[in-house]
Image (cartoon, rainbow, N blue to C red; front, side):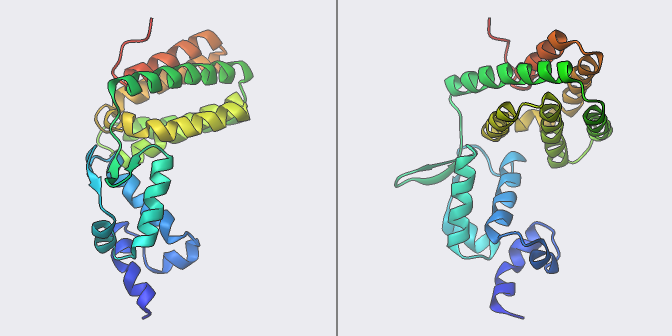
Length: 231
């Protein structure tokens, strides 16, 4: 067995992937590290404000420091990690003002997203959204929190596909990356409520009620952030 295979064994075991899958998936090692660290952060295993020391992560994952450094940079671009000179990388912690600003922007754009989806009302894409909703509802009580987080992302992506606005979709995807850390605790602890709210949004989209869909989607963001809507 080569030295490279031995070096990646701890990481592959940590993410529960058979070793042979690494070559088959053609996924760079950095991407595997990004996915592993993101999951640990969003699941709460690594807490907000905790330092992410390259040397420690490198030893823990059984890889060199270079892909760890690149992974931290990628997570910093998503807003999940903050990198500061002389302090290094830490899990991002938002100030109250940053939380308010992020929630206000995301709530506004999610409302527009749902409004356009209700107006454009593509039956095939709505069927896809219904399938995601059914799976989310099924797993909302007692399901794997990370699976629910990924399903939540798929729901919002599918809603954006119905809205059919590529500019809005790209902006929303970037904003969801930045707010993933903010909303992760609710996904872990209030899964049933999230999917009930998703179901209400979908009903409004199916009915073609664009104003109600927008209102529900906007409220959904404030509910997820556990904040009252901005006057």
